Every structure is written in C-alpha cells, then in structure tokens.
Amino acid sequence: MTKRLFCSIVIAAALTLGAARPGAAQSIAPDAVSAQRNSGISGTAPADLSGVEPATKKLKPICKPCLYYSGDFDPSNPDANGLINENASSDSILAQVYSAFTVPSGRAWHVKGAFINTLSTVAVLDPAMTQWSIWADVGSGKPGEMLFSGASDGTIAATGRTAFTFTEYTVSVKFKTTVVLNPGTYWLNVTPQCANPSDSTCSSAVFYESDVEGSSPPNHVGPANVVDDSFLNSSFYSYNYAPAQVDPCTDIGCDAFSFGLIGTE
Image 1 (cartoon, rainbow, N blue to C red):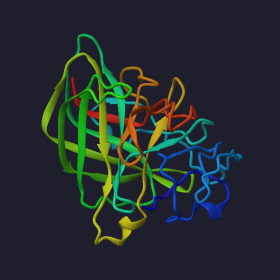
Image 2 (cartoon, rainbow, N blue to C red):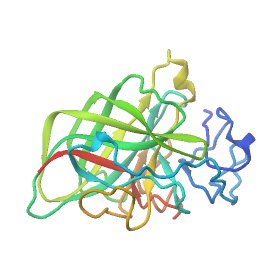
Image 3 (cartoon, helix red, strand yellow):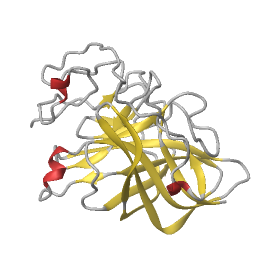
C-alpha cells in the first residue's frame, strides 16, 4: 500500500502530492522536517513564512453565540503546526484528533454546534455529512467514553489565513439536538471528509487540524485552554490515542488545537 507523507519543507519539489510515504502519522511545522516524502530521512529546514497570512483580527461569525474558542492559528508562531485529522479517499485514511476543553465549575453548557480550523488542500466536503463526537476520560492509549456523537451536513469556509502552502478553513457542524455538558473536562473531534471516489477533487485532499500555541492565542473565548492533553487516533498510522504534542508532533507545537463550541450557558 502506498501512503503519502506530507510535511512542510522548503524545497518546492518535495511538496508534490501523490508521492509514496512511509507509515508514519503526519504533522507539519515551519522549522522542522518530519520526513522527506520519498526517502523518510529526518532533518531540519529553515522556516519559509513569506506566504503566510497574519492572524485574523475578528472572530468569524460562526462562533456566535460562542461558548468556547481556543483561538486562532498563528502561522508566525515558531511552533505553529497542524496534525492529520480527516477521512480522505486519497489514501483511504481515517485519522482523528481529540482536543480537550473544560466546562467551568458551576456552569452548564447547552452546545448546539462545533467547529475546527483545518489546513487543507481543498475547499470541499464530499459527502457533506460530517462526523462529530464528544468524549470523557480520554488518555494515552485510552479511548475513554463517548458521550455524544452524530453526523450533520458540514460547512467549510476560508478563514483568510494560509501557511505551508495550505489554505486554512473552518469546518463547522450544527447538532441535530442540543448537547448539555456539566462541569468537567471533555474531548471533541470533528472529522472533515472528502471520501467520494467519484469526486476528482478528493484524490488530492488532505486535512490538518490547525494548532494554537502560547498562553494568549488570538481571539480566544471562554475558559483557559487545556494544553498538552490532545490525542491522535488512527489505525492507519498505528496510533492508539497517542499524545499529540509528543508523537507525531515531536514537541513542535500541537499543545492545543484550534476549535470551538457554539451554544449558550
């Protein structure tokens, strides 16, 4: 089985889609090379941020009313990164990022929708039906308990930011029924997909969930971010709820990811 390894490297020729990739999960970072596409050799490369757009100054309307937003992806941050999170027909890949958040003590959140920011090669969800889930007690090697899940028609809209040759998009879903969350820590996954074999666009589709770094991400809303507690699960890459910031991000970013919850208290 051939697999594409896509990482952020300065040499343009190495960014060609469709090359064979070894079976390692994908992350992207401006100041590191996880592996070269054909050889799998690790190394480092200088950042090339010449085509990077600045962070947006205002929240997108998607987060109104906004219970929580971890903040904007900031491509100028030296630890900026993204982690594979997709259902894509290009390689029959299913990889999912689970991002932690907290509902503060004394609160009850009525959640009506969720969204993530993703760095992608395509502006298409096909089919539009997008899976989402909310979990409790996720840990290293431990899936925890799925509390709520569903599938809704997703929307995809550009944020105005670009990085690593990708365009960033907000992928959002509205829940069919309101989810009530009491105080505690939870994990969210929203999985963009381009898995229609009849859609030629999907043959080159990849989606990386954008990360957020630092103590004050732009446009943050709500409780403080839960850092270093996100996980990647993908049987394709042999990752069983692996701590994202350790592996595969190898301590380059992935402390937290860019996502939000829509609803009211």
